[in-house]
Image 1 (cartoon, one colour):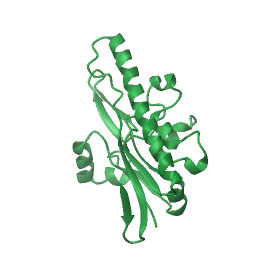
Image 2 (tube, helix red, strand yellow):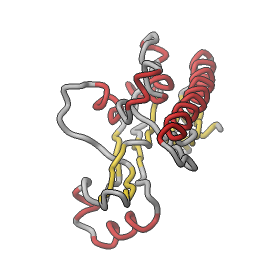
Image 3 (cartoon, helix red, strand yellow):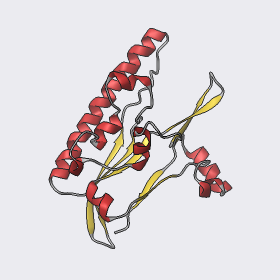
Image 4 (tube, one colour):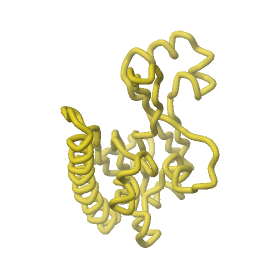
Length: 191
């Protein structure tokens, strides 16, 4: 989809993403769980490779690009990632490509640095077995190099507990907790 910012007349392309979940739904044994988890990761990585091809084709035309959505993945999300050397997010970002072809996403970058001692989350799931919530960073907004360097983007995860403005607003906090098990991720571009 091509979008034009009416105020600046700047055009950019959007690629919306919702990749396959890696969760082994339907597995009844540990072996089935392992097999389904690996199969699901393969499918998800194939989707991310396809998306990366679209990213490169778009960047080759010189168009500005934003790739955003639910990747159901992220650097270091689970151990199966080690079987395939990297996450789908890293593939789409172009971690091992020329800088002119790499997308920027600061939240993902935090997880690529093993020295980081803190975590971000854009989703929250209740795990009945442990009677606890699991937080995960699964949602991203990636921008092309030209947008990164010219629009001074400001990223935000609208987390009801981690974002101070959301936490201090009870109505916003309640809305975020009841609307979905994912929290919005946004980027403000300053043209």
